[in-house]
Amino acid sequence: MTATYRQPGVVLTDRRFSVPLDHDDPAGERIELYAREVVSASRGGTDLPWLVHLTGGPGFGATRFHGRESWLDRALRDFRVLLLDQRGTGGSTPANRQTLPLRGGPREQADYLAHFRADAIVRDCEAIRPGVTGGGPWTVLGQSFGGFCATHYLSAAPEGLSAALITGGLPTLDGHADDVYRAAYPRMARKSAAHYARYPQDVERARRIAAHLAEHEPVLNGGHRLTVPAFQSLGILLGAGDGSHRLHYLLEDAFVRTASGNVLSDAFQENVQAVLSYAGNPLYAVLHEAIYGQGERPTAWAAERVRAEFPAFDAGKALAGDEPLLFTGEAVQRWMFDCDPALRPLRETAELLAERTGWPRLYDVDRLAANEVPAAASIYHDDLFVDTGHSLRTARAIRGLRTWVTDEFEHDGLRVSGPKVLDRLLALTRGEA
Image 1 (cartoon, one colour):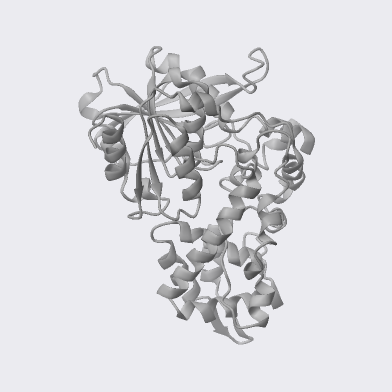
Image 2: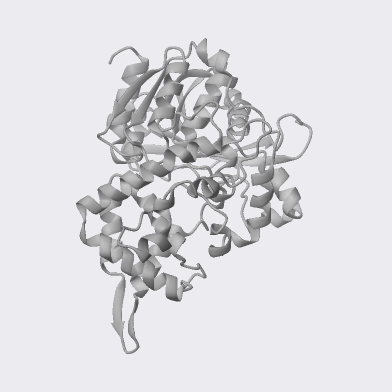
């Protein structure tokens, strides 16, 4: 039964769809997709064009808005919006440590999750689009990994699109995961240096915390093992506009004096766990490198292997000398599947995905070069999550795609200034900017 309800200024409708797990086997197993339809309360009976939003990730459900927040307010002036929970996330058939054992062992789980990449997500969109729009094309708004999906959409099913809007999500078209991380670690080093330039007192604070962890390696209340590499991975905060400030406030109250000496405070441990835990979005970790897989070469824990090429990230050497401890981010490594209780049961599954070969190609370079869909992308200068150089090369490879390159925002530009970002992208696709 379809549920329709209201929030301030909007009318919401829950939509559920049945799609094949494997679109090449339409008579086989099916999974459910959930999406939330949103329309302006004043335009509910109007025949409006559709915009489907594909959020970042992988492994995140669509944003749960309250009323007309952020970019949604701007979108509702022109569109009826579909907020899609991509397969495995949110209200769609879930894929996590609790549900995946229903598939069988790690091999069966890995085979199942191989159907959860951008190509399957786009085929999901095309499967549900006729029933949503009546057969007409729609506009896709892809943020981060959602932009990877939108790029695949342009490559695989451009007939389904009236426009493509991409924010911080133009992927490398042919680069291996190794190439992604060889570009990423220097960015992480720059982000760390910029943080320490803003908060020089954090150099000693981070070294003191890391030295404590190297000696004690505590287990947090939720069961997460806080190792030195886990602490370094708090650098993922530095990819957001307010992330440096959040990291600073996290570090400044790390220790508390007790009868047995200085220990890490409960507040610090709780806040760290909130950043590091993948309990709410395990597919982000399990599929993180698989989203780059193309062809016969396995991803083979690229972030972990490539990290060895950048000795400045070696915490032991930094602590033995007087160098600042470098933070990391946007890098999923094997040790995370030992440290995080939400990931431990999925370690073998992740190993099998890392070894997997024969990934389908995700991007048709010739088709992108002949693109006729109006398309625009915001590219964020020195984006922690998606390499700016890779994005610019891809932008040049997509015929007619217009870009807005800016250092006004970090990767979360659509979240922090959504109306402005969406307005600019729409203007670019319409030839108004």
